[in-house]
Length: 485
Image (tube, rainbow, N blue to C red; front, side, top):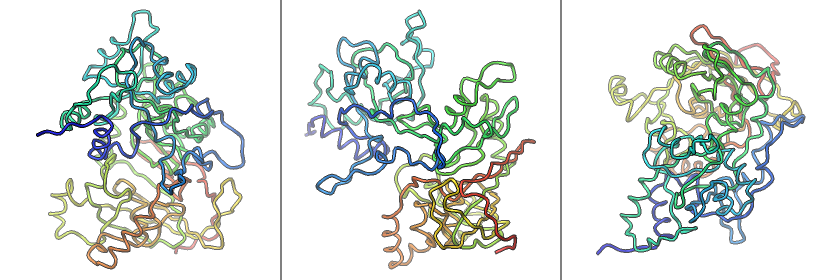
């Protein structure tokens, strides 16, 4: 006999099954009013750059309750609910469900913290559904991958489904598709919505107010000096404070080759949030496709600067990553990338299975020299009495976390890289040793996503006649010798 479950139990079971959502959401959040950080953040003058200021310091920390349990930070929490009966205005629905004022609800919508479930519709269908003909109810939206289960969790819903089977409930949740709504609009009662009452904020976004961060522009491409602690892509709770949004807001409007305004630049590649430096955006889809083709043909040259407390050996470094863990956006497994120093059985076999097993990672360290870092030189890093080394790294292949993972595997982790420092010197080969495997488990329990800029900069990029070089990195330019390490 098929068991019957209540919605709360079903939701928890579903989230156990769908680990893809666990990193971002809580089933139901408290309905406390959002903090004043919902208001627009203005660029502030400070000796410490905004990239050095932690992202909502207190809200980013895990909250420890009296019983010792750790909670997720506020920005990870969301409300999953349905639009109440007789409510047809989105900001009114958000105001009711999130227990905030209408003005605060509108701000949540405009920053991109509100999502609504849409059936499989074309773009025109979605716009037609929310357009009343007068222009006042048009919506903008951003797609997010399917699989974000939400639910009609009973808030404002007059329909009871407590007798839904687990299979039926999972099937329904898996079929849900959410789109981000960016302007106040009309909405049908009973529509599933998701609200992030405390959006994650990124003060470093407003560093783009400095025009010197625009490194290059032509009729197709834009190259900017991305500040650390700013994501390349939008967060689930914040569509505006990311590279495309901030560049468009503070450096635009840009013009296409035909003289039209660029609505929002497109991302050509990714740079980790905790890393600053050269980032390429395109003014249109054609430029994006051209850049992708150049990447496939390995016609894009990238140079990084890396800072470590151990000297990095010069020359080519060839390692191997497990392909399944290297995919961007993958969930599950370790958040960091382990590499292998042992060449697979044969290059031919490794190449044939590279999409499902091992992928080759190649970089060249062309220079490594000791530097000095001044503690109060516009940052909060304390160098102590350790010797630091700056390496110039040329990427031959471009993999997720490649520089960070490869340097850590040879015992040279980047400064401040809390994701890779705990596993310094560890490789896949250690899994064959039971004692080392236990050490790896212990090290993995200590890895954390960095909350401060790490010792890495995307220093220069060259492609299709474009040459761009980032400015001085956050740690300064304290070269004290020119000899090789």
